Image 1 (cartoon, helix red, strand yellow):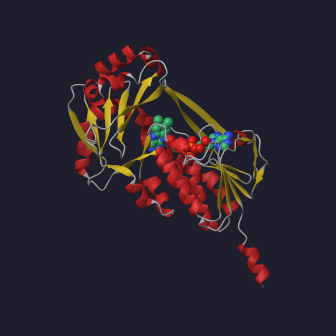
Image 2 (tube, protein in one colour):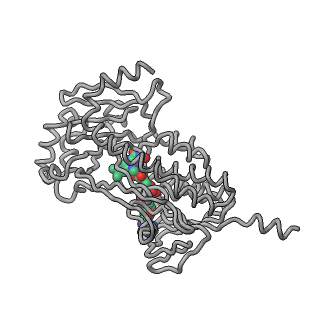
Length: 384
Ligand code: FAD
């Protein structure tokens, strides 16, 4: 009798490719269902000191992502480590500003949170589960979709189920793409460049803190998200052709003075100038990836591996984290993980495609329509 009980209690052993924002959430959530989890990540542990020395890059965390983080007990920790943004603040060329709220009350907010800090917190939360093992410095070089990862210089790892959370250039997805699998990728003509606005001498934020700041300028724009330490991380989105015209410090600052004049004194002219020219990061590309199905054999892809989207809707990570909650809902229905990934892999792509399309739409909305549609938008809010 006890033997039968033990057999029915045996849970599929899971291996996860990638220890980014989505892989870590998957590890914690599936561990809570009693699975043995082994997660393999290319990079060193981001909780090591060297990783923490980098620049602060932040993300907006919304309801979709928070739903999953709540399920693994991280909601309070995230709120304590983020800055609430209940509204956007629009900056006109004239320097005038106005607000566009996200909802009817200040309780409708998105949260600005450091990507690195969030990744560290998620990995710590996953590791607290005794059935989770994290393996860093493991470069996946090949994949067997029955559930095996192969590495550049380490022994293979096998499980009953493989979760591919290895990002926009996923090795797991590449293997799936050799079979019956729809795949498309699009690079948009814009790139992005991050700029840092340091905190003021008194430690305060140099812009009103609880806003996602937007400087829409038609074909291009800049945004700024607050960090907990008083700084802002700004992102400049420009056509690559324009990036070519601001490759020196002088041309960079001249561009900023012409299009974002109110930001110069806020950045500090010298500080801003240092962020252009040789040795600084150039404009980086943005990719949109659509795939279907999201599962083949014993393998399922989640997050950017399944649906990298352009960042204009602030939903890439959020949709990826939501993938895990939706997968768990499907699992609850079947009470069998392999059946769940099969069903999930067929129905989830249409939602992923929808969010990818919305993000493309917001690509135009944010840089252009935010200003022109404001009165229309305000009226529709008033009607709610
Ligand atoms: P990743 O975070 O890319 O993690 C994948 C992991 O897999 C990495 O740790 C990587 O090292 C590892 N890996 C890759 N290859 C291998 C290999 N061969 N072997 C082993 N490990 C491997 N989303 C939002 O929701 N809100 C935002 O505000 C937002 N802003 C963004 C701004 C910009 C400029 C960009 C570019 C993206 C933004 N996103 C945002 C999107 C978000 O960054 C991604 O959707 C999110 O990081 C996806 O998480 P992931 O875990 O699927 O992939």
